[in-house]
Image (spheres, rainbow, N blue to C red):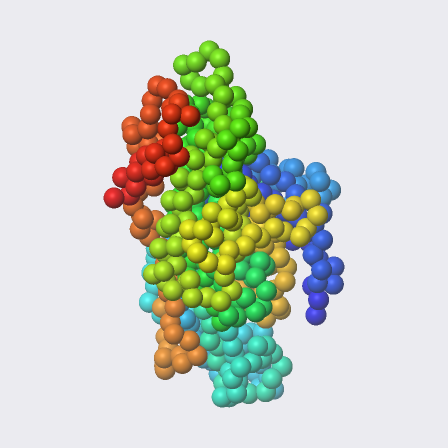
Length: 457
């Protein structure tokens, strides 16, 4: 049955917080309101100040309410892949009704059975994805309600995350005066919305170039295979420009948005623009090519780490190629540079929705679409999961044969400490802007790359 109703999604990003309101009519999504506000209280995609985040959420929600002409009371909020873990779960119950037909109460019981076991207080269940139900030995059933039987089984995937991370997101939303309707795993939602069924089946990689971090996700056999975090994103490009040119972060961000080219092969050596430099009374002119050298160095660092990540996890073997999205992906030349470094089929994803044709909106659109397009049985399993906040290891009589147990996890410091302002300022040029014409491309790029490389050694 096609869904109808209103759904609101919120993407709490390091750079901006986006809110989207969509109306589903007979299963078709129509966007009726969008709001965004500058983020505050986040670092590398993680909440570090709940009150500041709550205030930013309120601003974004108010803007969406004004455009949609409705009052927003509940939202579906996305959570990042930081330390996400995926594992198999399996449960079995006896059907107790007199008619021996499977009813919703049986579904709730079999979900609870799949999540029973020893408790781990530091982890929280984010979602359970049912893969198949079995009634009296007949497997491959997607919705067993109304079927006759004695025994009901369910096999699925359980997604868990750090309890602190989930708690902080929920608390920030509640501080903003809103109710959390659903918590959605952002990379999972992106995969469902951005990729078609064939790409999810045969295998595709999604790279989300966010402001504070880059998320690398692989999907195959309709399942999330892994979701890895690289603690670098678009904000690091802004910091690099600010440091190398000795200019403010606001001016650096403006330069990146208005003149930024990700690939020096595309940049002009003739086009110049003024930059307000600290210690100089008059602006100094630099070329588009010079700015591109700084941008290319950081993106080369990011895409090199992406390639290393994919080589370790065999992601480069997936036939669906690589889809790139996120705010930093909108910069000209990003796809060309990614293709050059990763050496694979790379393409840019741009949303089709009118007025939102920018890769930065892909995340919030996917959150709403993921919730709005769920089947009735998926909604029921989600409701049954809601009462099991603490993760439990599943009790499995026989090891499931339909899938190898999958674990996707990432420790935040797996690539070393992220680059902060203090470390970078200590190694970068301090007083003057280097002369553009006197330093060849290779010299500057190598110098900047060496600076970055020394931080991760």
